Image 1 (cartoon, one colour):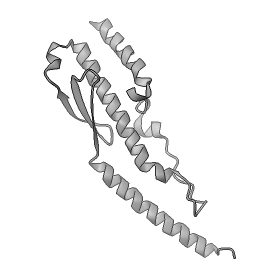
Image 2 (cartoon, one colour; image 1 turned 90 degrees about the vertical axis):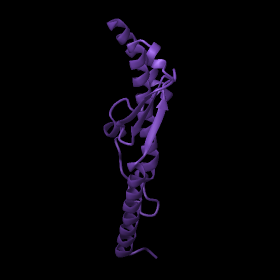
Image 3 (cartoon, helix red, strand yellow; image 1 turned 90 degrees about the horizontal axis):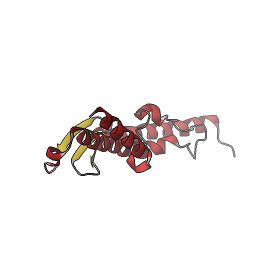
Image 4 (cartoon, one colour; image 1 turned 135 degrees about the horizontal axis):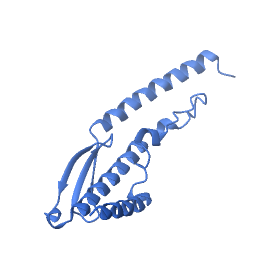
Length: 147
């Protein structure tokens, strides 16, 4: 026997309410979320929020004292870029269930998210994905040219 339109609507409304509650839980989980990353040379450690804002910057073991300004700048930027990429991936994993179609109500297709629009271009291309290595080298070259 086929479900009535009222039954399907009630099922869709119940699933929508469950999804709204799950989104609220995910948002509250991410409100205080942060990600800390050390630069490859271990000279700096940065912390970013779920929005990608830099919330803390630590200079480790006095290494910055012996570094050229351009080297220190590259270390900071590298760590910030990687921390933002890691946090962006965490946010994406948290919200991924809401992007899938509903198995029980096919009309609820899930949310289509343009992650590049959310995080900005290049954020998801952190050092672990390989994209930042070229940009980091380019940054070092550009900084080096200014010295």
